[in-house]
Image (cartoon, rainbow, N blue to C red; front, side, top):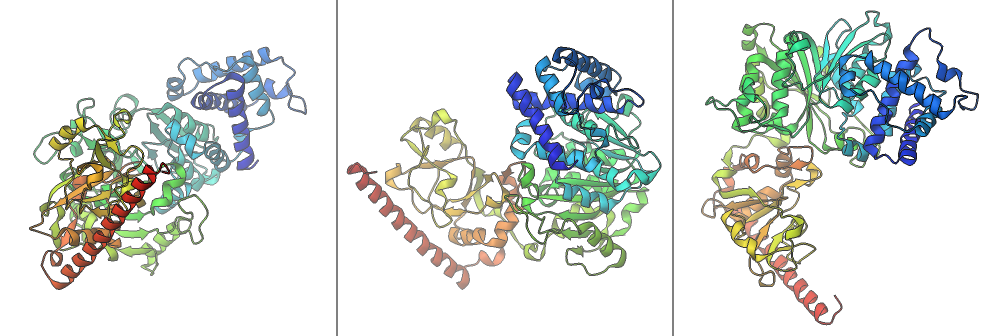
Length: 637
Protein backbone atom coordinates (compact mmCIF):
# COMPACT_ATOMS: atom_id res chain seq x y z
CA UNK A 1 0.00 0.00 0.00
CA UNK A 2 1.34 3.44 -0.90
CA UNK A 3 1.17 6.73 1.00
CA UNK A 4 -1.69 8.25 -0.98
CA UNK A 5 -3.92 5.18 -0.59
CA UNK A 6 -3.41 4.99 3.16
CA UNK A 7 -3.89 8.75 3.55
CA UNK A 8 -7.17 8.52 1.62
CA UNK A 9 -8.36 5.77 4.00
CA UNK A 10 -7.53 8.00 6.98
CA UNK A 11 -9.37 10.87 5.32
CA UNK A 12 -12.44 8.73 4.57
CA UNK A 13 -12.63 7.54 8.20
CA UNK A 14 -12.20 11.09 9.49
CA UNK A 15 -14.98 12.39 7.22
CA UNK A 16 -17.23 9.51 8.24
CA UNK A 17 -16.90 10.49 11.91
CA UNK A 18 -17.84 14.05 11.04
CA UNK A 19 -20.78 13.09 8.81
CA UNK A 20 -22.31 10.30 10.93
CA UNK A 21 -21.64 11.64 14.44
CA UNK A 22 -21.28 15.36 13.62
CA UNK A 23 -17.89 15.67 15.31
CA UNK A 24 -15.66 18.71 14.97
CA UNK A 25 -12.31 18.20 13.16
CA UNK A 26 -10.32 18.00 16.38
CA UNK A 27 -12.75 15.52 17.95
CA UNK A 28 -12.69 13.37 14.79
CA UNK A 29 -8.92 13.43 14.74
CA UNK A 30 -8.73 12.29 18.38
CA UNK A 31 -11.18 9.44 17.74
CA UNK A 32 -9.21 8.37 14.68
CA UNK A 33 -6.04 8.22 16.80
CA UNK A 34 -7.87 5.98 19.28
CA UNK A 35 -9.10 3.67 16.55
CA UNK A 36 -5.65 3.41 14.98
CA UNK A 37 -4.21 2.57 18.41
CA UNK A 38 -6.82 -0.19 18.74
CA UNK A 39 -6.11 -1.43 15.23
CA UNK A 40 -2.32 -1.61 15.71
CA UNK A 41 -2.67 -3.44 19.03
CA UNK A 42 -5.23 -5.84 17.60
CA UNK A 43 -2.85 -6.73 14.79
CA UNK A 44 0.15 -7.05 17.10
CA UNK A 45 -1.29 -9.86 19.23
CA UNK A 46 0.66 -12.82 17.88
CA UNK A 47 -1.08 -16.17 17.51
CA UNK A 48 -4.52 -14.72 18.09
CA UNK A 49 -7.41 -15.40 15.72
CA UNK A 50 -8.49 -11.85 14.89
CA UNK A 51 -12.27 -12.01 15.24
CA UNK A 52 -12.77 -8.74 13.39
CA UNK A 53 -10.76 -9.79 10.35
CA UNK A 54 -12.26 -13.29 10.35
CA UNK A 55 -15.78 -11.91 10.31
CA UNK A 56 -15.31 -9.84 7.15
CA UNK A 57 -16.53 -11.10 3.79
CA UNK A 58 -14.62 -10.44 0.51
CA UNK A 59 -16.44 -7.13 0.07
CA UNK A 60 -15.36 -5.83 3.47
CA UNK A 61 -18.71 -6.42 5.17
CA UNK A 62 -18.90 -7.68 8.75
CA UNK A 63 -21.11 -10.59 9.68
CA UNK A 64 -21.51 -9.13 13.17
CA UNK A 65 -24.27 -6.53 13.58
CA UNK A 66 -22.97 -2.97 14.22
CA UNK A 67 -23.87 -2.97 17.91
CA UNK A 68 -22.07 -6.25 18.63
CA UNK A 69 -19.05 -5.24 16.54
CA UNK A 70 -18.80 -1.87 18.30
CA UNK A 71 -19.08 -3.56 21.69
CA UNK A 72 -16.19 -5.89 20.85
CA UNK A 73 -14.02 -3.00 19.62
CA UNK A 74 -14.75 -0.94 22.75
CA UNK A 75 -13.90 -3.85 24.99
CA UNK A 76 -10.63 -4.59 23.22
CA UNK A 77 -9.66 -0.90 23.13
CA UNK A 78 -10.18 -0.60 26.87
CA UNK A 79 -8.04 -3.70 27.49
CA UNK A 80 -5.26 -2.44 25.21
CA UNK A 81 -5.14 0.93 26.97
CA UNK A 82 -5.05 -0.78 30.35
CA UNK A 83 -2.02 -2.82 29.29
CA UNK A 84 -0.31 0.06 27.48
CA UNK A 85 2.65 2.07 28.79
CA UNK A 86 1.88 4.78 31.31
CA UNK A 87 2.06 7.56 28.71
CA UNK A 88 -0.83 6.04 26.74
CA UNK A 89 -2.87 5.53 29.90
CA UNK A 90 -2.36 9.22 30.67
CA UNK A 91 -3.56 10.23 27.21
CA UNK A 92 -6.79 8.22 27.42
CA UNK A 93 -7.44 7.66 31.14
CA UNK A 94 -11.10 6.74 30.56
CA UNK A 95 -10.20 4.30 27.76
CA UNK A 96 -13.42 5.07 25.92
CA UNK A 97 -14.24 5.46 22.25
CA UNK A 98 -16.84 8.23 21.88
CA UNK A 99 -18.10 7.19 18.46
CA UNK A 100 -21.62 5.83 18.03
CA UNK A 101 -22.02 2.10 17.29
CA UNK A 102 -22.98 2.87 13.69
CA UNK A 103 -19.98 5.11 13.12
CA UNK A 104 -17.51 2.77 14.86
CA UNK A 105 -18.68 -0.21 12.80
CA UNK A 106 -18.46 1.82 9.60
CA UNK A 107 -14.91 2.96 10.37
CA UNK A 108 -13.93 -0.63 11.16
CA UNK A 109 -15.22 -1.75 7.77
CA UNK A 110 -12.96 0.81 6.03
CA UNK A 111 -9.89 -0.67 7.75
CA UNK A 112 -11.03 -4.30 7.52
CA UNK A 113 -8.56 -5.29 4.80
CA UNK A 114 -5.75 -2.99 5.97
CA UNK A 115 -2.87 -4.36 8.04
CA UNK A 116 -1.28 -1.20 9.43
CA UNK A 117 1.59 -2.97 11.16
CA UNK A 118 2.60 -4.57 7.86
CA UNK A 119 3.02 -1.16 6.23
CA UNK A 120 6.49 0.39 6.34
CA UNK A 121 7.38 3.20 8.76
CA UNK A 122 7.96 5.69 5.95
CA UNK A 123 4.53 5.12 4.40
CA UNK A 124 2.67 5.17 7.71
CA UNK A 125 4.20 8.42 8.93
CA UNK A 126 3.94 10.10 5.51
CA UNK A 127 0.29 9.08 5.22
CA UNK A 128 -0.53 10.69 8.55
CA UNK A 129 1.16 13.92 7.46
CA UNK A 130 -0.59 13.93 4.09
CA UNK A 131 -3.94 13.21 5.72
CA UNK A 132 -3.56 16.22 8.02
CA UNK A 133 -2.93 19.19 5.69
CA UNK A 134 -1.30 22.43 6.97
CA UNK A 135 -4.58 24.27 7.63
CA UNK A 136 -5.87 21.44 9.85
CA UNK A 137 -2.48 20.95 11.52
CA UNK A 138 -2.42 24.61 12.51
CA UNK A 139 -5.90 24.37 14.05
CA UNK A 140 -4.83 21.29 16.00
CA UNK A 141 -1.58 22.91 17.12
CA UNK A 142 0.53 20.44 15.12
CA UNK A 143 3.77 21.73 13.56
CA UNK A 144 5.88 19.12 11.81
CA UNK A 145 9.52 19.40 10.84
CA UNK A 146 9.96 18.84 7.08
CA UNK A 147 11.23 15.33 6.27
CA UNK A 148 14.16 16.68 4.25
CA UNK A 149 15.44 18.69 7.23
CA UNK A 150 15.00 15.77 9.61
CA UNK A 151 16.79 13.36 7.29
CA UNK A 152 19.70 15.76 6.76
CA UNK A 153 20.16 16.36 10.51
CA UNK A 154 20.03 12.67 11.39
CA UNK A 155 22.38 11.65 8.57
CA UNK A 156 24.91 14.34 9.54
CA UNK A 157 25.09 13.08 13.15
CA UNK A 158 24.62 9.41 12.10
CA UNK A 159 23.97 7.78 15.52
CA UNK A 160 24.59 4.05 15.88
CA UNK A 161 21.91 1.55 17.02
CA UNK A 162 23.84 0.96 20.25
CA UNK A 163 23.42 4.62 21.25
CA UNK A 164 20.72 6.19 23.40
CA UNK A 165 18.76 8.69 21.29
CA UNK A 166 16.22 11.19 22.67
CA UNK A 167 13.85 13.83 21.34
CA UNK A 168 12.61 15.95 24.29
CA UNK A 169 9.95 17.62 22.12
CA UNK A 170 9.18 14.62 19.94
CA UNK A 171 5.79 15.62 18.55
CA UNK A 172 4.74 12.88 16.12
CA UNK A 173 8.17 11.26 16.39
CA UNK A 174 9.57 12.51 13.09
CA UNK A 175 13.22 12.64 14.19
CA UNK A 176 13.00 9.27 15.92
CA UNK A 177 11.35 7.75 12.86
CA UNK A 178 14.28 8.92 10.76
CA UNK A 179 16.73 7.45 13.27
CA UNK A 180 14.86 4.13 13.02
CA UNK A 181 14.95 4.33 9.22
CA UNK A 182 18.70 4.94 9.36
CA UNK A 183 19.24 1.91 11.58
CA UNK A 184 16.85 -0.41 9.76
CA UNK A 185 15.67 -3.81 10.89
CA UNK A 186 19.06 -5.25 10.05
CA UNK A 187 20.58 -3.47 13.05
CA UNK A 188 20.03 -6.73 14.95
CA UNK A 189 20.40 -5.11 18.36
CA UNK A 190 16.75 -4.34 19.13
CA UNK A 191 17.60 -0.65 19.64
CA UNK A 192 15.66 1.85 21.74
CA UNK A 193 14.65 5.48 21.28
CA UNK A 194 13.14 7.89 23.79
CA UNK A 195 10.56 10.61 23.11
CA UNK A 196 8.94 13.17 25.40
CA UNK A 197 6.09 15.56 24.67
CA UNK A 198 3.57 17.34 26.87
CA UNK A 199 0.88 17.34 24.16
CA UNK A 200 -1.18 14.12 24.47
CA UNK A 201 -2.29 14.23 20.84
CA UNK A 202 1.29 14.50 19.60
CA UNK A 203 2.54 11.69 21.81
CA UNK A 204 -0.32 9.50 20.59
CA UNK A 205 0.85 10.18 17.02
CA UNK A 206 4.40 9.25 18.00
CA UNK A 207 3.18 5.99 19.54
CA UNK A 208 1.22 5.16 16.38
CA UNK A 209 4.32 5.76 14.31
CA UNK A 210 6.82 3.98 16.56
CA UNK A 211 5.03 2.04 19.29
CA UNK A 212 4.42 -1.19 17.35
CA UNK A 213 7.61 -1.61 15.38
CA UNK A 214 8.65 -5.16 16.35
CA UNK A 215 12.41 -4.57 16.20
CA UNK A 216 12.40 -1.17 17.96
CA UNK A 217 11.53 -0.10 21.51
CA UNK A 218 9.88 3.32 21.72
CA UNK A 219 9.91 4.80 25.20
CA UNK A 220 7.36 7.62 25.16
CA UNK A 221 6.63 9.92 28.07
CA UNK A 222 3.84 12.45 28.48
CA UNK A 223 5.78 15.15 30.33
CA UNK A 224 7.06 18.69 30.18
CA UNK A 225 10.68 18.22 29.16
CA UNK A 226 11.79 21.42 30.87
CA UNK A 227 10.12 21.05 34.26
CA UNK A 228 9.22 17.35 34.72
CA UNK A 229 12.20 15.48 33.30
CA UNK A 230 14.64 14.53 36.05
CA UNK A 231 11.94 13.39 38.43
CA UNK A 232 10.49 9.95 39.15
CA UNK A 233 11.16 7.53 36.27
CA UNK A 234 13.38 10.09 34.51
CA UNK A 235 15.56 10.80 37.55
CA UNK A 236 18.54 9.03 35.94
CA UNK A 237 18.24 10.74 32.56
CA UNK A 238 20.76 13.52 33.14
CA UNK A 239 24.17 12.84 31.54
CA UNK A 240 22.83 9.66 29.92
CA UNK A 241 22.02 10.25 26.22
CA UNK A 242 24.42 9.91 23.30
CA UNK A 243 22.38 11.98 20.84
CA UNK A 244 19.49 14.41 21.01
CA UNK A 245 17.50 15.53 17.97
CA UNK A 246 14.72 18.06 18.48
CA UNK A 247 12.65 20.93 17.15
CA UNK A 248 11.37 22.66 20.31
CA UNK A 249 8.42 25.07 20.33
CA UNK A 250 9.28 28.55 19.00
CA UNK A 251 8.11 31.87 20.40
CA UNK A 252 7.06 30.46 23.80
CA UNK A 253 8.17 32.43 26.85
CA UNK A 254 8.65 30.94 30.30
CA UNK A 255 6.93 32.89 33.06
CA UNK A 256 8.83 32.61 36.38
CA UNK A 257 5.63 33.37 38.30
CA UNK A 258 4.14 30.10 37.02
CA UNK A 259 7.22 27.90 36.59
CA UNK A 260 10.41 27.55 38.60
CA UNK A 261 12.69 28.93 35.90
CA UNK A 262 15.35 29.96 38.45
CA UNK A 263 16.67 26.38 38.32
CA UNK A 264 17.97 27.13 34.81
CA UNK A 265 21.16 29.13 34.39
CA UNK A 266 19.79 30.64 31.18
CA UNK A 267 16.92 32.25 33.10
CA UNK A 268 19.18 34.15 35.50
CA UNK A 269 21.02 37.26 34.34
CA UNK A 270 24.61 38.27 34.97
CA UNK A 271 23.39 40.29 37.98
CA UNK A 272 21.81 37.21 39.56
CA UNK A 273 18.23 38.30 38.97
CA UNK A 274 15.72 35.97 37.33
CA UNK A 275 14.56 37.19 33.93
CA UNK A 276 10.86 38.13 33.86
CA UNK A 277 10.61 36.02 30.69
CA UNK A 278 12.91 33.76 28.70
CA UNK A 279 12.52 32.08 25.32
CA UNK A 280 11.83 28.37 25.65
CA UNK A 281 14.23 27.57 22.78
CA UNK A 282 17.15 28.88 24.86
CA UNK A 283 16.15 26.86 27.92
CA UNK A 284 15.79 23.77 25.72
CA UNK A 285 19.44 24.07 24.70
CA UNK A 286 20.48 24.11 28.37
CA UNK A 287 18.23 21.13 29.16
CA UNK A 288 19.70 19.19 26.24
CA UNK A 289 23.22 19.76 27.57
CA UNK A 290 22.04 18.47 30.95
CA UNK A 291 20.63 15.30 29.36
CA UNK A 292 23.60 14.54 27.10
CA UNK A 293 26.41 12.37 28.40
CA UNK A 294 29.97 13.77 28.10
CA UNK A 295 30.79 13.84 24.39
CA UNK A 296 27.10 13.59 23.48
CA UNK A 297 25.82 15.38 20.37
CA UNK A 298 22.88 17.71 19.80
CA UNK A 299 21.04 18.67 16.59
CA UNK A 300 18.37 21.28 17.30
CA UNK A 301 16.15 23.37 15.02
CA UNK A 302 16.15 27.01 16.14
CA UNK A 303 14.88 30.39 14.95
CA UNK A 304 17.75 32.21 13.30
CA UNK A 305 17.29 35.06 15.80
CA UNK A 306 18.47 32.83 18.67
CA UNK A 307 21.89 32.35 17.10
CA UNK A 308 22.27 35.75 15.43
CA UNK A 309 20.54 38.41 17.53
CA UNK A 310 22.27 40.27 20.33
CA UNK A 311 20.71 41.16 23.67
CA UNK A 312 21.64 40.52 27.29
CA UNK A 313 18.94 37.86 27.56
CA UNK A 314 20.54 35.91 24.71
CA UNK A 315 24.21 36.86 25.09
CA UNK A 316 24.49 35.75 28.71
CA UNK A 317 23.05 32.26 28.05
CA UNK A 318 25.49 31.91 25.14
CA UNK A 319 28.37 32.42 27.58
CA UNK A 320 26.90 29.70 29.79
CA UNK A 321 26.58 27.29 26.87
CA UNK A 322 30.30 27.80 26.27
CA UNK A 323 30.94 26.22 29.69
CA UNK A 324 28.95 23.11 28.73
CA UNK A 325 29.91 22.39 25.14
CA UNK A 326 30.68 23.87 21.76
CA UNK A 327 29.16 24.42 18.34
CA UNK A 328 30.24 21.87 15.72
CA UNK A 329 28.29 23.25 12.79
CA UNK A 330 25.28 25.19 11.55
CA UNK A 331 22.93 24.44 8.68
CA UNK A 332 21.07 27.57 7.57
CA UNK A 333 17.70 27.18 5.85
CA UNK A 334 15.75 29.48 3.51
CA UNK A 335 12.44 30.95 4.83
CA UNK A 336 10.25 28.76 2.62
CA UNK A 337 11.57 25.54 4.22
CA UNK A 338 8.81 25.50 6.83
CA UNK A 339 6.03 27.11 4.74
CA UNK A 340 4.45 23.81 3.79
CA UNK A 341 4.22 22.77 7.45
CA UNK A 342 2.18 25.79 8.49
CA UNK A 343 4.75 28.21 9.86
CA UNK A 344 7.01 30.90 8.42
CA UNK A 345 10.12 31.25 10.56
CA UNK A 346 13.72 31.82 9.51
CA UNK A 347 15.46 28.75 10.90
CA UNK A 348 18.81 27.03 11.32
CA UNK A 349 19.83 23.59 12.55
CA UNK A 350 22.50 23.94 15.24
CA UNK A 351 24.88 21.01 15.80
CA UNK A 352 26.69 21.00 19.16
CA UNK A 353 28.69 18.61 21.33
CA UNK A 354 28.98 18.40 25.10
CA UNK A 355 32.52 18.52 26.51
CA UNK A 356 34.05 15.18 27.42
CA UNK A 357 36.04 16.97 30.11
CA UNK A 358 36.30 20.56 31.33
CA UNK A 359 39.79 21.18 29.90
CA UNK A 360 38.41 20.65 26.41
CA UNK A 361 36.90 24.15 26.52
CA UNK A 362 40.31 25.73 25.78
CA UNK A 363 40.95 23.67 22.65
CA UNK A 364 40.81 25.33 19.24
CA UNK A 365 37.73 24.84 17.13
CA UNK A 366 36.30 25.65 13.71
CA UNK A 367 32.59 25.62 12.93
CA UNK A 368 31.40 24.25 9.61
CA UNK A 369 28.60 26.15 7.89
CA UNK A 370 26.22 24.48 5.44
CA UNK A 371 24.27 27.21 3.68
CA UNK A 372 21.08 25.78 2.12
CA UNK A 373 19.57 28.31 -0.26
CA UNK A 374 17.19 25.96 -2.11
CA UNK A 375 15.08 23.58 -0.04
CA UNK A 376 13.44 21.98 -3.09
CA UNK A 377 10.19 23.95 -3.16
CA UNK A 378 8.99 27.52 -3.22
CA UNK A 379 6.80 29.47 -0.79
CA UNK A 380 3.64 27.91 -2.28
CA UNK A 381 4.90 24.37 -1.75
CA UNK A 382 5.52 23.73 -5.44
CA UNK A 383 8.59 21.72 -6.43
CA UNK A 384 11.66 23.76 -7.26
CA UNK A 385 14.57 22.37 -9.24
CA UNK A 386 18.00 22.17 -7.65
CA UNK A 387 16.95 21.34 -4.07
CA UNK A 388 20.02 20.92 -1.84
CA UNK A 389 18.59 19.18 1.25
CA UNK A 390 18.71 15.70 -0.29
CA UNK A 391 22.49 15.91 -0.68
CA UNK A 392 23.52 18.31 2.10
CA UNK A 393 24.45 15.53 4.56
CA UNK A 394 26.85 14.01 2.01
CA UNK A 395 28.23 17.50 1.32
CA UNK A 396 28.91 18.11 5.02
CA UNK A 397 30.57 14.72 5.57
CA UNK A 398 32.74 15.08 2.46
CA UNK A 399 33.70 18.61 3.47
CA UNK A 400 34.65 17.67 7.05
CA UNK A 401 36.47 14.44 6.24
CA UNK A 402 38.51 15.59 3.24
CA UNK A 403 38.33 19.39 3.35
CA UNK A 404 37.10 19.04 -0.23
CA UNK A 405 35.73 22.24 -1.73
CA UNK A 406 31.93 22.04 -1.59
CA UNK A 407 29.79 24.94 -2.79
CA UNK A 408 27.29 24.64 0.08
CA UNK A 409 29.89 24.41 2.88
CA UNK A 410 32.65 26.53 4.34
CA UNK A 411 34.68 26.84 7.54
CA UNK A 412 34.17 29.75 9.91
CA UNK A 413 37.23 31.31 11.53
CA UNK A 414 39.16 29.48 14.27
CA UNK A 415 38.50 30.17 17.96
CA UNK A 416 38.45 28.48 21.37
CA UNK A 417 35.62 26.00 21.88
CA UNK A 418 34.34 27.94 24.89
CA UNK A 419 33.78 30.98 22.64
CA UNK A 420 31.88 29.18 19.86
CA UNK A 421 28.41 30.22 21.08
CA UNK A 422 29.29 33.84 21.88
CA UNK A 423 31.13 34.36 18.58
CA UNK A 424 28.43 32.69 16.49
CA UNK A 425 26.52 35.88 15.52
CA UNK A 426 29.62 37.51 14.01
CA UNK A 427 30.94 34.25 12.56
CA UNK A 428 27.66 33.65 10.74
CA UNK A 429 27.86 36.97 8.94
CA UNK A 430 28.00 36.03 5.28
CA UNK A 431 29.93 37.92 2.64
CA UNK A 432 26.82 40.00 2.12
CA UNK A 433 26.33 40.54 5.84
CA UNK A 434 29.81 41.60 6.89
CA UNK A 435 29.88 42.96 10.42
CA UNK A 436 29.54 46.73 10.03
CA UNK A 437 31.87 49.10 11.82
CA UNK A 438 29.30 51.66 12.77
CA UNK A 439 26.96 53.16 15.35
CA UNK A 440 24.03 51.16 16.81
CA UNK A 441 20.67 52.48 15.65
CA UNK A 442 19.52 53.13 19.22
CA UNK A 443 22.22 55.84 19.54
CA UNK A 444 20.84 57.61 16.48
CA UNK A 445 17.14 57.46 17.33
CA UNK A 446 15.00 58.96 20.07
CA UNK A 447 12.31 56.27 19.68
CA UNK A 448 12.24 52.73 18.26
CA UNK A 449 8.94 50.99 18.94
CA UNK A 450 6.03 49.11 17.45
CA UNK A 451 2.53 50.53 17.35
CA UNK A 452 -0.68 49.31 18.91
CA UNK A 453 -3.49 47.55 17.07
CA UNK A 454 -6.92 48.38 18.53
CA UNK A 455 -9.72 45.90 19.07
CA UNK A 456 -12.18 45.62 16.18
CA UNK A 457 -14.88 47.43 18.16
CA UNK A 458 -12.69 50.56 18.47
CA UNK A 459 -12.53 51.33 14.74
CA UNK A 460 -14.69 54.21 13.50
CA UNK A 461 -15.49 56.08 10.26
CA UNK A 462 -13.44 59.11 11.30
CA UNK A 463 -11.25 60.34 14.12
CA UNK A 464 -7.55 59.59 14.59
CA UNK A 465 -5.94 58.14 11.47
CA UNK A 466 -4.03 54.86 11.88
CA UNK A 467 -1.20 54.02 9.50
CA UNK A 468 -1.45 50.32 8.63
CA UNK A 469 0.82 48.04 6.62
CA UNK A 470 -1.33 48.73 3.56
CA UNK A 471 -0.52 52.46 3.81
CA UNK A 472 3.20 51.76 3.41
CA UNK A 473 4.34 51.67 -0.20
CA UNK A 474 8.14 51.81 -0.04
CA UNK A 475 7.92 55.09 -1.97
CA UNK A 476 6.04 57.23 0.54
CA UNK A 477 3.02 56.92 2.84
CA UNK A 478 -0.29 56.45 1.03
CA UNK A 479 -2.75 58.48 3.09
CA UNK A 480 -5.90 57.28 1.29
CA UNK A 481 -8.28 55.95 3.96
CA UNK A 482 -9.14 52.28 3.67
CA UNK A 483 -11.24 49.91 5.71
CA UNK A 484 -10.67 50.49 9.45
CA UNK A 485 -8.18 53.37 9.19
CA UNK A 486 -9.66 55.47 12.04
CA UNK A 487 -10.22 55.17 15.77
CA UNK A 488 -12.14 57.65 18.03
CA UNK A 489 -10.36 60.87 19.03
CA UNK A 490 -10.86 59.80 22.65
CA UNK A 491 -7.96 57.37 22.08
CA UNK A 492 -5.60 60.21 21.13
CA UNK A 493 -4.41 61.06 24.64
CA UNK A 494 -3.64 57.43 25.48
CA UNK A 495 -1.52 57.15 22.36
CA UNK A 496 0.23 60.45 23.02
CA UNK A 497 1.30 59.24 26.48
CA UNK A 498 2.54 55.98 24.92
CA UNK A 499 4.59 57.94 22.34
CA UNK A 500 2.47 56.53 19.52
CA UNK A 501 1.55 59.77 17.74
CA UNK A 502 3.50 60.25 14.53
CA UNK A 503 5.65 63.23 13.59
CA UNK A 504 7.16 64.54 10.39
CA UNK A 505 10.58 62.89 10.05
CA UNK A 506 9.48 59.53 11.50
CA UNK A 507 10.40 56.36 9.60
CA UNK A 508 7.94 53.46 9.46
CA UNK A 509 8.50 49.88 8.33
CA UNK A 510 6.64 46.56 8.30
CA UNK A 511 7.49 44.69 11.50
CA UNK A 512 4.97 41.84 11.66
CA UNK A 513 3.68 39.57 8.92
CA UNK A 514 2.77 35.98 8.15
CA UNK A 515 6.19 35.51 6.55
CA UNK A 516 9.69 36.92 7.29
CA UNK A 517 10.13 37.94 3.63
CA UNK A 518 7.69 40.83 4.17
CA UNK A 519 9.48 42.27 7.21
CA UNK A 520 11.22 45.59 6.37
CA UNK A 521 10.04 45.13 2.79
CA UNK A 522 8.34 48.53 2.82
CA UNK A 523 10.08 51.45 4.58
CA UNK A 524 8.71 55.02 4.38
CA UNK A 525 9.47 58.42 5.87
CA UNK A 526 6.69 60.78 6.95
CA UNK A 527 7.06 64.15 5.24
CA UNK A 528 3.54 65.36 6.10
CA UNK A 529 0.37 64.30 7.87
CA UNK A 530 -2.33 65.70 5.53
CA UNK A 531 -5.17 67.88 6.72
CA UNK A 532 -7.72 65.55 5.14
CA UNK A 533 -6.81 62.84 7.66
CA UNK A 534 -6.98 65.34 10.51
CA UNK A 535 -3.33 66.43 10.65
CA UNK A 536 -2.55 63.73 13.24
CA UNK A 537 -1.93 60.01 13.00
CA UNK A 538 -0.85 56.94 14.93
CA UNK A 539 0.07 53.43 13.77
CA UNK A 540 -0.77 49.76 14.34
CA UNK A 541 1.18 46.93 15.95
CA UNK A 542 2.39 45.50 12.64
CA UNK A 543 4.38 48.69 11.98
CA UNK A 544 7.71 49.74 13.53
CA UNK A 545 8.55 53.40 14.23
CA UNK A 546 12.07 54.83 14.10
CA UNK A 547 12.39 58.49 15.14
CA UNK A 548 15.88 59.59 14.02
CA UNK A 549 17.89 62.22 15.84
CA UNK A 550 18.13 64.83 13.08
CA UNK A 551 21.32 66.25 14.60
CA UNK A 552 23.05 62.85 14.27
CA UNK A 553 21.83 61.53 10.92
CA UNK A 554 19.79 62.85 8.00
CA UNK A 555 16.45 60.94 8.11
CA UNK A 556 16.55 60.53 4.32
CA UNK A 557 20.04 58.99 4.48
CA UNK A 558 18.84 56.56 7.15
CA UNK A 559 15.81 55.79 4.97
CA UNK A 560 18.09 54.91 2.05
CA UNK A 561 20.19 52.66 4.28
CA UNK A 562 17.13 50.81 5.62
CA UNK A 563 15.76 50.29 2.11
CA UNK A 564 18.94 48.68 0.77
CA UNK A 565 18.54 44.92 0.00
CA UNK A 566 21.53 43.89 2.14
CA UNK A 567 20.16 45.71 5.20
CA UNK A 568 16.66 44.33 4.59
CA UNK A 569 18.14 40.81 4.62
CA UNK A 570 20.02 41.63 7.81
CA UNK A 571 16.82 42.87 9.48
CA UNK A 572 14.89 39.81 8.32
CA UNK A 573 17.54 37.69 10.03
CA UNK A 574 16.41 39.24 13.34
CA UNK A 575 12.85 37.96 12.96
CA UNK A 576 11.43 35.74 15.70
CA UNK A 577 8.33 33.62 16.33
CA UNK A 578 6.01 31.16 14.58
CA UNK A 579 4.65 34.17 12.74
CA UNK A 580 7.25 36.73 11.77
CA UNK A 581 7.87 39.48 14.35
CA UNK A 582 10.62 42.11 14.42
CA UNK A 583 11.31 43.34 17.95
CA UNK A 584 12.43 46.91 18.64
CA UNK A 585 15.30 45.76 20.92
CA UNK A 586 16.72 43.68 18.09
CA UNK A 587 16.40 46.43 15.50
CA UNK A 588 18.10 48.83 17.93
CA UNK A 589 21.35 46.83 17.56
CA UNK A 590 21.53 47.43 13.78
CA UNK A 591 24.84 49.14 12.96
CA UNK A 592 24.83 52.29 10.80
CA UNK A 593 28.13 52.88 8.93
CA UNK A 594 30.12 55.92 10.10
CA UNK A 595 30.36 57.25 6.55
CA UNK A 596 26.57 57.85 6.51
CA UNK A 597 26.84 60.14 9.52
CA UNK A 598 29.17 62.59 7.79
CA UNK A 599 27.85 65.39 5.65
CA UNK A 600 29.72 64.04 2.63
CA UNK A 601 28.75 64.42 -0.99
CA UNK A 602 27.31 60.89 -1.63
CA UNK A 603 25.13 61.07 1.48
CA UNK A 604 23.82 64.51 0.48
CA UNK A 605 23.04 63.24 -3.02
CA UNK A 606 21.14 60.27 -1.58
CA UNK A 607 19.10 62.59 0.63
CA UNK A 608 18.23 64.89 -2.29
CA UNK A 609 17.04 61.98 -4.45
CA UNK A 610 14.75 60.68 -1.71
CA UNK A 611 13.46 64.17 -0.95
CA UNK A 612 12.40 64.48 -4.59
CA UNK A 613 10.74 61.05 -4.39
CA UNK A 614 8.90 62.20 -1.25
CA UNK A 615 7.75 65.39 -3.00
CA UNK A 616 6.33 63.37 -5.90
CA UNK A 617 4.64 60.98 -3.46
CA UNK A 618 3.00 63.94 -1.68
CA UNK A 619 1.73 65.36 -4.95
CA UNK A 620 0.37 61.99 -5.98
CA UNK A 621 -1.35 61.60 -2.62
CA UNK A 622 -2.92 65.06 -2.90
CA UNK A 623 -4.18 64.35 -6.43
CA UNK A 624 -5.64 61.03 -5.28
CA UNK A 625 -7.48 62.75 -2.43
CA UNK A 626 -8.86 65.46 -4.76
CA UNK A 627 -10.06 62.81 -7.21
CA UNK A 628 -11.79 60.80 -4.52
CA UNK A 629 -13.41 63.97 -3.12
CA UNK A 630 -14.80 64.94 -6.56
CA UNK A 631 -16.07 61.43 -7.21
CA UNK A 632 -17.72 61.33 -3.79
CA UNK A 633 -19.39 64.73 -4.44
CA UNK A 634 -20.77 63.36 -7.72
CA UNK A 635 -21.87 60.23 -5.83
CA UNK A 636 -19.71 58.06 -8.06
CA UNK A 637 -17.20 56.84 -5.48
